[in-house]
Length: 306
Image (cartoon, rainbow, N blue to C red; front, side, top):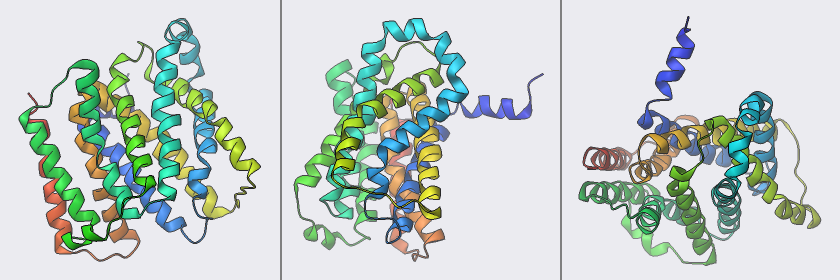
C-alpha cells in the first residue's frame, strides 16, 4: 500500500513548475546565505569550498543510491562521454567561471549577468536542436528580464549609469552560457535512473575540480571551521546542490529548456523576499512591481509556448 508521503513525492516529482520554483528558491536562499556569512566567514570561502560541496554531495547520494548506480552501470559505461560532458559544463566549468567572475565584479553586475540564462538557453537550443522561441516566450523573457533589472537597480534606472564593465562580467556571462549548455543537453542524458545520473554528474564534476582545489591549497587558502561555516555549508550541500539539481533536472525533463529558462528570473525574487523577512530589509513599492513583472513574464512564456 502506498503511503501518503510516497503519493506526495510522486505528485511533487511530476509538477515541473513547482520543481523549477523550488530550484529558484534553493538558489535564492544561497544568495542570502552568502550575505549572512559575510563578515563572519572569510570572503569567498563558500565559493572556494566548492570542491567540498560537490564531493560531500556525491558521498551522500552514493551512500543512498548506490544500488541504482550499480544497476545502471552497463548503460553508464556506454554513455560515459555524454555524462562526462554534462558534468564538465554543468558543474566544473560553470562553477569555476562563476567563482572567478564573482571575485572581480559588483554584486549588481553579478545579478544582471545571471539574468542572461534564459537567452543563453534559447541560443544553445537553437544552435544544437533548432528549437525556436515562440513570440510568447520572447515576450515573457523580456518582461521578466525587465523585472529583474528593476530589482537589481532598486527601482532606480539611474543606477545603471554606475555600472562598470570588467573582466569579471565576461567570466560570469561565460559561466551562464556553460550552464545553459548543460540545460540544453539534458535531453541527451542516458536512460538511467535520475539519482544515478545525479550521482555520476556530481561525482565527475567534483573530480575534475580537484586541480583547482589543489591550487587553492597551494596558495595558502585556509577555511575556518566553526558553527556558522558548518551550517552554511550544510545548506549549500543539501539544498543548493542536491535538492536544487534534482528539481532542475526533472523540471527540464518535463518541459523543454526554453520554457524552464525564465524560472531563473525567480532567483532574485526569492533572494529579495528572504532578505526582507530574515535580514530586515525594507519592502518597497517597486518590489511589488518587480515581482508582478517577473511572474507575469514567466506566466506568459508558459501559456504562449506553442
